[in-house]
Amino acid sequence: MQKPWKSRLWIRVGWAVAAVMLLTAQVAWASPQQMHVMEGFLPWQWCLLWFGVAIPFWILGFRQIGLVASKHPETKLLLALAGAFTFVLSALKMPSVTGSCSHPTGTGLGAILFGPTVMSVLGGIVLLFQALLLAHGGLTTLGANTVSMGIVGPLVAWAIWVGLRNLAPTWLAVFLAASLADLLTYVTTSLQLALAYPDPVTGIAGSFLKFAAIFAVTQVPLAVSEGILTVLIFNALRGTAPSELKTLNVAGV
Image 1 (cartoon, helix red, strand yellow):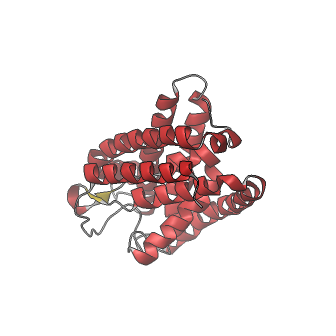
Image 2 (tube, rainbow, N blue to C red; image 1 turned 90 degrees about the horizontal axis):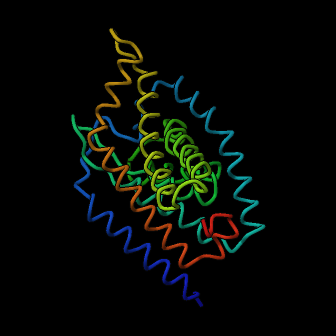
Image 3 (cartoon, rainbow, N blue to C red; image 1 turned 120 degrees about the horizontal axis):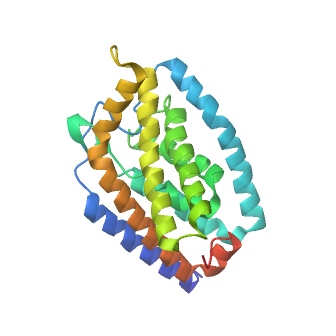
């Protein structure tokens, strides 16, 4: 029989996800350039490089998930919630300028709860399913997309959370962790594209500025929206799963 707090938790999560979808959802246009990096967009050399960066994080992440699941099985629901939150938000493609698209990432919450290595695995799984089921991203670019959304974003979120949780109000630490993780994901992707396709005249720097500018118009408000939503979800968890958060050393801060 499902515990009452679990029922309340899923009801609140459902309402929060519905709210962000109503606030930000638009028709998802197919685009030749999108974030995540689409299948076949990166040369094979860069695909291999980014897989090489991602694989060590996946190994560490699987080990960390195993430790959490064995030592603290009561947190498995929160682990599933972190993965579902990332999947739902990162699947919301929003039309941007010049025929491209942007989307939230949803990795900040999981990074706060479980740390960045766990999110490298959850982010990789989310990206794999989206590539297979939604044609969002690709298999050859899975490593690159994991680095930007599943590694850099969570590392930024975790670092901000650890650095600010005892110095600033909790809501502000959560907001900054989630929103800046979103923004740095897109900065990383812009850099990845710039490295693969430097501008003939201005080189990597010029190409980076062009790619980053394409997404800046939509990504900044999306990052702010994601930060607000993550604060709402975190506050709901503090009210419905305090013992689990205490186990993860994130309760009462």
